[in-house]
Length: 259
Figure 1 (cartoon, one colour):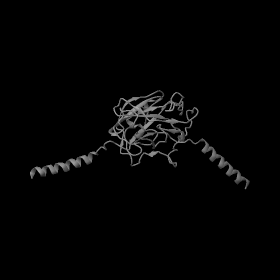
Figure 2 (spheres, one colour):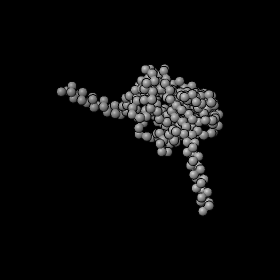
Figure 3 (cartoon, helix red, strand yellow):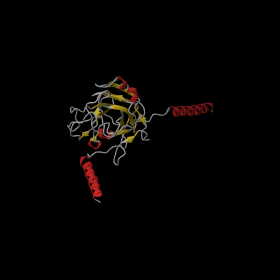
Figure 4 (cartoon, helix red, strand yellow):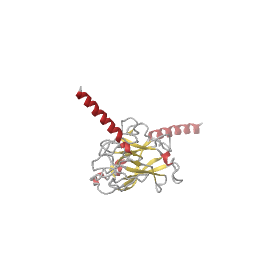
């Protein structure tokens, strides 16, 4: 009986400790209230098809410097990525512009191997490829995180890599609707990811320090798997459908001419 009583007290203490340290934002993938979107979710209608301005930072081996690995659908593994390196960046482009629809509009996939090894990145968007605008973000991690330390996802919002590999961090263009006349949220053709160095030199929107695993090497910094699109200004017509439509139009045109 005494052993059972002790066990219950331990469980209660663990529960209270977890609750005490939990932040105010959405929890890890698979938990109630999470905003993570799985890679095979049918809401994705498009994926990044091009890239530009890949500027890798320090501490990244050549093995991980292949931007083409960030094109197309998310793979959800540790290896099919392009690494930004410490403080690096990349801009991804799309066949059809991303548009502001109901709810989330785009989502960014990283390759974290668990729910807390979160190498974070800023997300910025542009309509013209020149003027970029950053999503508001917040980090409540209060102290430095070691190279293989943990970041509680409930302390993070508005930053890419909030979730483990295979699951994406979503973003809503409506948040930027009034930020500048130079940004048309219904015509976003560029998404830039910038690695955050977790040594205390990078800041969130409110001016607080952003901490994430530091230092790391070999494939340091943000590892981009893919960017999925949920709403587009114009959904691209698959080639087979276009050919079918062209054939039908040609047949009707011939018949009309013969008549």
